[in-house]
Each structure stands twice: as structure tokens, then as C-alpha cells.
Image 1 (tube, rainbow, N blue to C red):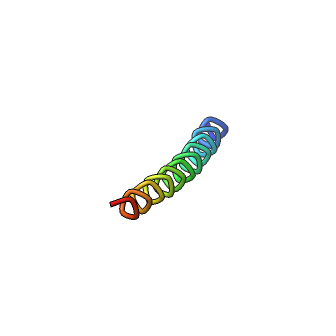
Image 2 (spheres, rainbow, N blue to C red):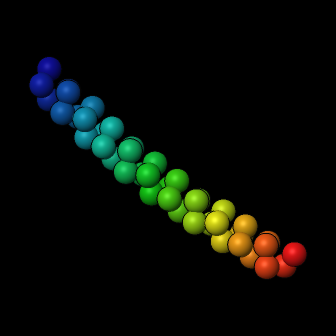
Length: 41
């Protein structure tokens, strides 16, 4: 039972890290495309 809880915790941590990285990366991309769009206009 304890081992299962630890596994779930690890999976959640990994998933959260991936999510944070992805949102941060996509946020940067959106920011870049927005700023370059502003420059073009």
C-alpha cells in the first residue's frame, strides 16, 4: 500500500513537471509570435 502511494506521488510529480515545462515553453512561443506580430503591424 505504501509503495503504491509513493508510485502515484512520483508519477504526479513527473507529470506536473512536464506540464509546467510545456506550459512555460508554449507560453514563450506564444509571446514570441505575438511580439513579432506586433512588430509587423
